[in-house]
Length: 567
Image (tube, rainbow, N blue to C red; front, side, top):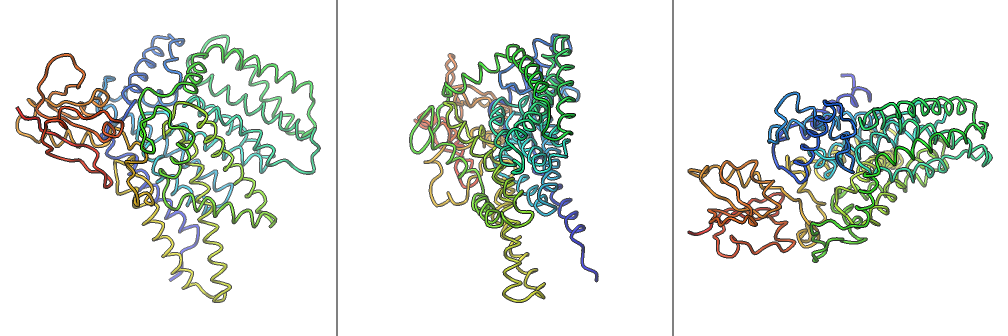
């Protein structure tokens, strides 16, 4: 029997991966209502109402600005009523899941152009089952979309820098960055990375003047495409003024494109004029959306009004150690070692033909992770998901590390046993893939649909509940389903903590009461979540004089306690 070719094998694995990745993102979407999702469903309704009425100035509904999330979530209104419901939530999540699957597919294609078929396939697998990225992909929120567009921006710009004659990647990078900024304002951090990327790929045969002019032209083209994308997709800019600005930016883009075609010998005066045009347009745009930048300034300087539990303390700002620890806790045991290993392999081969560009690419990816970690650590408002743009980048680096490890292992087998060692290579490949499945993928997939409860298996050696706040909202739907099976469940009165009621009442068929409601209510049950226990929001009614009846356990952790209140 003729053995399958590499191309056939890769297509087979790609199809299997697509099916599994789709199942993890597009099924059981009604489970586990999480924080802020109600707000984003409301935002999408307000946004679409303003668009339908032609009141485009009213489409600035939040400083995030979350425009991409709002557009996609609004698609649900064509298939169901716009009011808040589990059905509407599931439908909005489905559309976001489809968009993210397309994004992962585009990222895999860009990886194929950068590193070849197998890194693209491995990278797609790692991206599909990255725990925090997967958990956020199943939410109506901004973070997963922003992280995906940041990844596409980075990969596209790295492709352009590695092959400057392929200017379509520069255009694509600018468009992707515009989408990232529309998704979430912290994507602006990437502006600090763009000049770093240009410097990493500087041609040593160029003079600094030539490099500066070429970089200036590329930067103008990049920013013009970004601004044009923002103007096209945000109705706030749908007016005559920004139509004229858009035409000016299009002219700047065409000018920069033409000058880039000539090499690095562009005319400085034309570039300076273009800088003035882009600067004026950017300044006017910033004035129009100043609320966004005001919100960013507020987020940088003001801690969140919800407490964190971090390293045994209840804090509003968990400090500098928070995000480095988040990187360790929310990745799989293999991710960071593979990242370090991949960078080491490429560094050792950096002088070999073809590896210099790959090493620079890896350095560019590492720079993105470091920039986001550093910049977000400077802010006072911190959540694990804010660092999400760093995680897909880490998964790409881990995929490079895994592929380089396989290549090194095959070379070692050839050197040790000779070149005719297909059986040894096959055995090694099977064992390696099984280890990857058992350590990297299955521990994540088995948690469906509660991927947010995942934490690094290495932390099984300690009690994660004493280190960091665990997933808010997880398990409330299961508690509601348990109580719904009670006789006369419609008559039951259940008390929840004020900030937790939104996660519970959508699933419960009886009466839900918040603990801070003014009316005197004697509940039949009280539902207490682990997050409330971590930050000291208990004892409550149930823990004081109730009887523990049932416990909801997820990923080996007790998440929800259901107390029966005696009459």
